[in-house]
Image 1: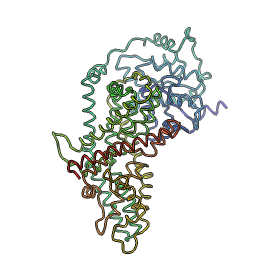
Image 2: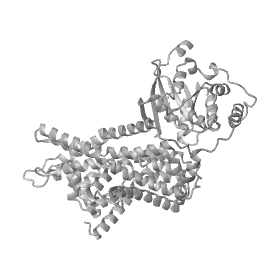
Image 3: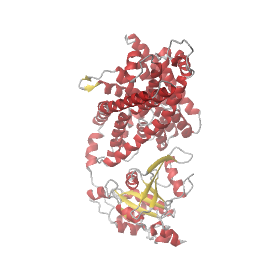
Image 4: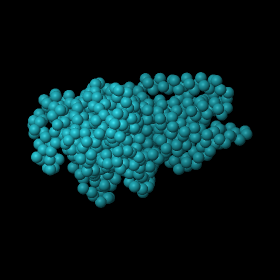
Length: 627
């Protein structure tokens, strides 16, 4: 039996990466597995599960699992609980790892080694990856992996996850069959005199014997933080940085969006020319091509936004932004710890809501969940881009792009709205103890191109998967509803007005007419409940089928620019600032809060806010003569 275990590393052999937050664990996971990754959720919970495959030089394959970051094996949050359950073999749908790779920050062994000692006590085969070894050397910290391995009783190698061959020593170590054996049978664990002491005391003794117990010198990061974290200069820099990001979203995306739009139009014309007039041609050109193309055209803007988020995250700036906003968050009854979930919600409300698991105070966590969807997620960006492109002129104002200014204002409106809701909840609910902000500020470093590129590739794949699944299915369903039944003989109006969708749109328009929405917009809002970016493709389908004669809609922007008033466009923008959430977000709230109560409360109050904001905006625009 022992010989069989030693001889092979089957594809089912599982190695789990464990480490503190900011130890470079995910960077090492990306380096080991490259693009051979898949992301899902653990069974029964919404916590993200990242798994990849590592091909060793010998040709053997190992499954690699990237566990959520944790500081100890005494869980205080759902993230940490999942890590402990996987290591104990009690996680649903996940086997116990055959090997644990403890990824430690070589510049902060005092904190990291406590986790290693805890993993060792679990009896799992264990190795230590001294990550960020290059940064430790730059700071004058001299590390001897062999000496540390002798102290810990487990193999230790140095790694630099951001360098091309930075994982070579770990790959070679994983080739050795003996490291997959249980710790107690692989090598004896040394028993120093202080072995019965608490882990922090044992770590202190280990570092003292290795000559690593000296205080780290002041770093360049400390000097940078004197400016970045300044109470006056810091917030100004943050505001300028966010403003420039939104300017770039429009300025940089203009050319690639034009290319995609041209390709979509060319494809629709070519396919339409090959098919006879009828339902098949309408289905392919007005349903499939127009629907999918109407959303894909906004991929450049989504990727530009994610590019900046990834760069800020990679550089170590995001925790500083949380620190800067702690005072503002405290004014509405929250702490700066809520900033990271809210920032994640700019990408998508679902991971933002999931990120609230790190907030210990139940009341603060619930409030953060309730306001997270008010952050402008990337699904709203296609809607914003469409309306801004149609109604806001492309010109410079005081040397700045006007369209970018409007986009920045929309994001700012969502932020201010969420803070207002949090303040109201602070005044009307039981006041929970606001936790002081305690978080680690990682060292500044240049973003690594490979990590940013991999992150963008994953986001593009997720976006295109939504286009090819949810959005495509909803677009096809809308085309069907907008095409059947056929108009009666002698009908003079566009065929869509006699369809199921047309009747539904006219019915909803009675409710939405006070805020300036016509029946076409009313139709588009319905599939938008499943995924908000579908509203763009829905409008494209509706207006293509609404056309008469040779007036087929080749591009949606000039169509709505001619048929809508500025007051209607502004009202729709206000609606999407507070728009009721997609079904996936409400389902996530239900799972995170343990029932439908708060999900329904969220849907109700956001609908009311959206309607109120649109009503005020529309009436104000009419009063200004923009109707």
